[in-house]
Length: 255
Image (cartoon, rainbow, N blue to C red):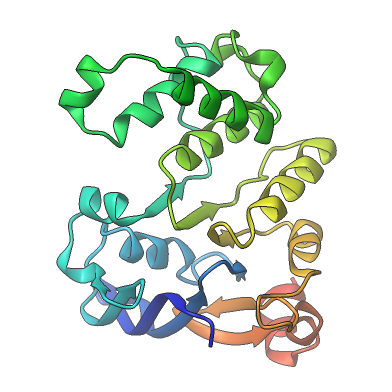
């Protein structure tokens, strides 16, 4: 059986009487790539806030890796446990070079004291060089991060997350504002991570979702797409299945 990396059970979150999450239950397997879609206000961001410790739910349970109770941990502890989050707007150190951004991210996992006394060794340099190649920024290693295009900044931030070796990556609308070419290259990057990391991709670009969902999961079945609506799972399964669901067409795809 495939190990479950993330398990949400009956998660409920309310803000001033508004039910943002309504008994939301969801599980993601280790090494899986899961796309999550749904209309604005469906609860996608709140769900990620719960997973990363930014929001505490009123009800329910959240487990990571089978035995880590996420609801008992603070945000830094959850990041250290192996969950990385990428927000829609890229956040990089714009005055530093691309190389330095990746180097700083690698040091960060060692703690503050280690970062202060760290010395670049050949293994560290090799790892940064490999990451530059993976996110296709090798020719821009010495460029100041602030000079990168929007798409390149997104790739750099993804590289910074990967330097911390997360088991689960939460990616919020990663291709918003990208050109068609950048979107295509981002899909290739995400697909190259499948199996090495687990990915939850929240996205509105249905062509991008279709590209990611086209392959098979570790169980040999088509990759699942989860549709959220009004704080709960409305539908889940292969993309063609959820696209044909009358409820999904009514609340999301029909718009």
